[in-house]
Length: 163
Length: 163
DNA sequence: CCTACCGATCGGTAGG
DNA sequence: CCTACCGATCGGTAGG
Image 1: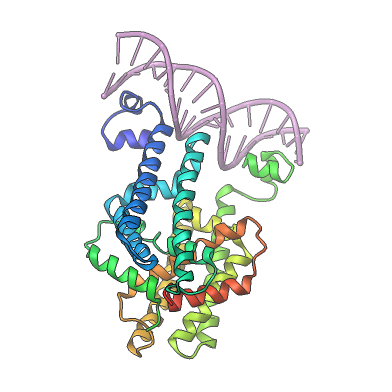
Image 2: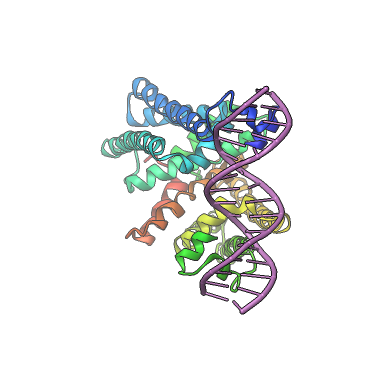
């Protein structure tokens, strides 16, 4: 809290005129990000027709959440474990909802023969994990073409490293 | 340190008859893991002929490091930022060496037409990032076929989600 | 928004 | 390996 206060040019004690606790700050950040991710789920479901289309849209929107708020995403990703019991359970529930929905799409894709017939959980976690370097990358203000990243990540995740 | 002491059934003060400091503990863990990863680089270089073969071997060995020491890998991954200045620089240097070598193999693979012609850094970080869910997964003692995971991850990373 | 301050906790030491 | 304890730091409050 002393660091945060210093960064905005006041004493730690003065912060408490603006927020009620340190945990409230963390909660706000984590829930904001969780809700943004859940929002992308609804859009991808609405816009995509086939499983592959839905997953493609979701990847692009997921990347957009990260590039739009790399610092908040980094905090949510690294610190959600320190949430108080109730908000932590809340966060985990939202994450589960996200994962379960995506898992359903992957299973659909396998069934209709669009996706490889591999273990669904391996596919799910590999996909989600592979996006996690982006928030580190974007925190350090790079001049990167965001559309290029979206395009190439989809290419890579759907098509693989191999030509 | 009180928690660690409790876990091994002694008082915090007594720990200091076995180790010299908390930071020393972290340093040992991070350096052990960093060196294991560097070791896989040497093996993959020796055994693989083409870029694709080297990368395939590296992925399998990388997974083996994680499944063999999921707890240490998790600590190294989550806490290396809290290393003291010198060991931290040391750790970063080893990581850079790993990344630079792998980057070279990816560029080779693109040149000989084995790999997709996408941005090398995107390929590098996506590949490495995609392996990072495994240490969370393996910390909770699952009965998973490790060879199946190695096989399917290679399939997925080289070939993509799409059939 | 600041000064002054509190109780809890942390890594670690002294001395046995 | 334990008891007793220290100085630093942390989240936060009282009172203005």
